[in-house]
Amino acid sequence: MKCKKCTKKAVINLKSYNLSLCAEHFEDFFVEKTRETIKRYKLFSKNDIVIVAISGGKDSLALWYVLKLLGYKTHGFHIDLGIKFNNYSEISKQKVINFSEKNGLPVSIVSLKESFGFTIDEYKKMGQRTACATCGIIKRYLLNDFTRKTGADCLATGHNLDDETAVLLGNLLNWQMGYLKRQHPKLPASYGYFAPRVKPFCERTEKETAAYSFLKKIDYVQDECPYSENASSIFYKKIMNEIEQRSAGTKLRFLRGFIDNKKFFSEERGVEERLDICLNCGQPTVSSPCAFCRIVQRFQKVISSERRES
Picture 1 (tube, rainbow, N blue to C red):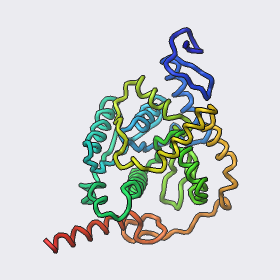
Picture 2: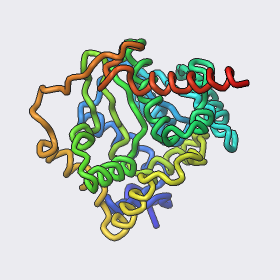
Picture 3: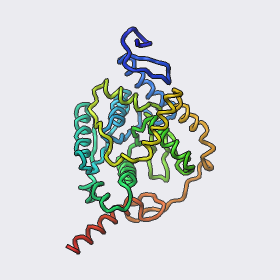
Picture 4: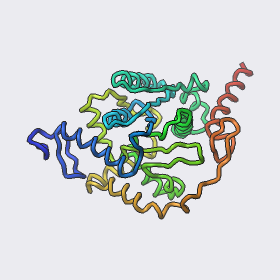
């Protein structure tokens, strides 16, 4: 199999594009397609400061790398969740630090344990909610808080096409109208508090980000989060992969078709849901205290109770 751009040996076959590419031309293709996505959805400009959520995985590190190549001003943000299984969080943090130093990219790291007194492992033992649900609340809160405090223009995540179509399938199967209304490569600023959230890799497949990371020798955490084993998103990804195998290009058509017809899932433009203000932290929330503050309070209550009993 030869590259369609030259006579070199192809390293990847992109069936959805009917395209086989060598390493050099695939790298160019990947970067250019990311540039096109940023332009297509008007995600941000060269004058903007972009906070990049960095987990230590292939998608977030590759995104950080590509945005640097494209000349965007970025600042990484990593959350140390304190997951001890297979030393997962420590390894993730070290991958982020190494990558930052190697590429001369600034990064800020927040330790959940040091900042709030508990880890995901410790909170899970309380059995209040699943680790994934708790983790999602914590990440959203801290990422929003950091972006606002730094005065950055937007928050970028490494969600790829596989992630987006799996979420879209799940939301459609369960008719989650609120989530469908919000799902988009660019979630705009809201409530005078939350910065825009953008997904520059939303049209790149996981296969592509893995291949790009391999070719660029990006050292990333290859293990999945130990708490994601039974996540419904993994099941939906498997379904979408089977459909894609039978009909190449389905994932991209599915996502773009949804975005083009998003008006059927949206409420009247310009109308925002009314939110309260969390009396503890000041973030907009459905009810005060917000979900994050309730997590912190619940853990502190348990710890206080254990200390009294000991």
